[in-house]
Length: 109
Image 1 (cartoon, rainbow, N blue to C red):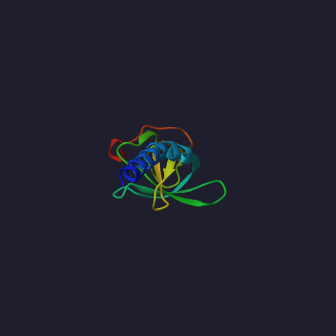
Image 2 (cartoon, rainbow, N blue to C red; image 1 turned 90 degrees about the horizontal axis):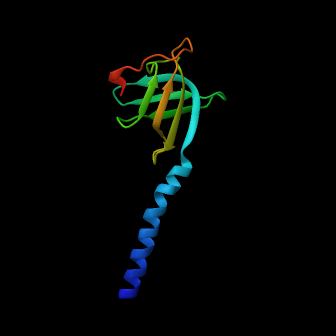
């Protein structure tokens, strides 16, 4: 019984240590245009070059640079898929609708 518990504990530890490395592998970049933004829920829908729409969340830990998060703005972001299928952004670089970078609004962070 002790041996079973020891082996189980070791397997659990290995799984926990491997999880961050596996999550890093899933991180991806996405470029596109903002279709819609929900500032209260900190979510947006981004349409990529192929026309596929992706739901993206951001948090207070997300690095936000460039212009404001607004419909029609172009952006590039790095994100990891969440368990619910939405992408959780680690960084977002927004260009204004004119394509020129602008200052990010403090209320969006």
